[in-house]
Length: 589
Image (cartoon, rainbow, N blue to C red; front, side):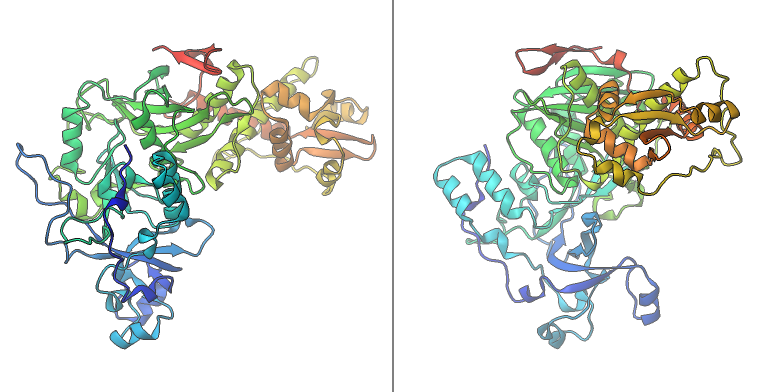
């Protein structure tokens, strides 16, 4: 049941300082001082002020027999003010909630300067400033509310609130990582404590919208968010006892590296999948988070207990790390959405909880402290590449060749470009290996200090890719494979016009490696491998032998490492199901 916050009339927020919303400002990453020189030397970011809210702090610890309450109590009027600043950059992930004392107006309105002697936002603003969008009722919201269509009402409200600031300041995960929410997510419809529309009960009717932002303790088992550490512990003890892992079927298990993959039917675990959607919306800007989870399969990556043994004592516990989705009965796409938590993506985006502010660490005396007797094996790397490989393998077992849904986010484009590049490099290495039959082996690339291979320079016409793009059917253009090796035998073969493989096309390469033709063509273009031979009047896919061998060797070392999530098709226990229109249920490995 989706709560309807419009049943109780809301009072519009105070408009005395609303003229400051949208004003240009500068965020000082360090606390600004009175010295102008220190301000000029500090790191700054330019942006636009969208909202000002108070930081909600947890109440004092409750007795063990009493469950802590979520409703803010009296005495929060003196909590610090935070400003949400939309950074004027292409990457909106830099936007977020900043202490008001770090914000300085560039050109504040004259009304603000009359009441303050400086341009600092802390001198101009003394109370929360909320956007008036929360009191607006769009035509779509009114129509769906009259028709009592709750899911459609949710989508209409999401369209209204999509550009508003998130009410989650930081996520706290596993008592170890703290990372910001990048974008707005409709957590308020699942947890009223984070809903800016739900009125506070502290004021007489008509009530005002919730003026607080809060930190969210993310439960690694149920994916619910809590305002205090005690609430999350109560949830784990009372409701998640013996079920400290994702629901659904475990279809992949790697005990050597310590992680598993669960397949979840959105029709069977609705609440859990809705929390997955909210997590995805918190870190994906263009994602349309909705409650229509029934038409999706969810594939969740969970780390085994050995990675974080200090969090709980259950050795069978598994911690959420990322997920991807596939829409049921859709053949042209093998993946709809993919997300890895920032603390597990790349080198890890999230500071240790011990360095965080006391706003949430004060709720637990042992928060962020180390314990003895257990040694963690650390987070796993390459989770995103693992999930992409699984999506292609599942499509292959459904006898389909598809790709991910577009458009990509910037991070998604980087991840897929890397995956396609690795697939093409392995195929090129296989062609080199097959072409060495009857020829002398090529020596391995020389490695100097620092572990980087010395690669030979290749001369290629700068406009060869442009000429190839002008062909009407580029994907079926015949290509000859050749190597750029400088050995006398390889040079003799090139002068004679012999190639490692002749008459191959981009379409044939795509079918051999299981990718879409457009993705293969874009990959070889980015790598600069397509050349036009004016002498032989044909196109040639030049293989940089030293570079390919060095890259394939690096990938082999990556696969042997136990710190990297490498996909092994033999460990995927899943059978096609015709009744489900794609993938059916699996069983535990």
